[in-house]
Length: 127
Image 1 (cartoon, rainbow, N blue to C red):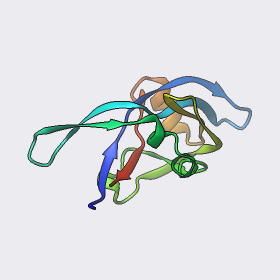
Image 2 (image 1 turned 45 degrees about the vertical axis):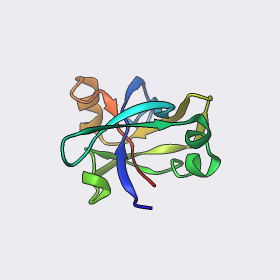
Image 3 (image 1 turned 90 degrees about the horizontal axis):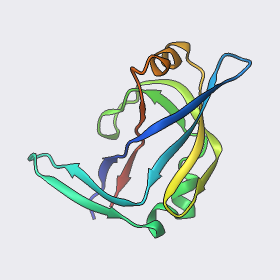
């Protein structure tokens, strides 16, 4: 079965400034539902992501302590600048995958504060 790259989007939650200058955001990393994905030919394909798949322990573990980048790597390829990391606790409430993210990079935090960046967009591969 072919592996394909997917992008999911969610909004960042209010920031919590830390003593070291970094900022913590509580975020929804993924969710259950039907999502539209644009195909290379321009057509839109809808895919269902079930609670059983989204909440799988092995899938949730892949999100723990991963780097956070500024910008989105194109189609799962070359990474952008690393600006922070996802925390080591990733939870699933039956509908949403949630975790804290810390951003160490002052420029990235400034862009978020100015509302230049308002969304989190994890990328993942599917079969």
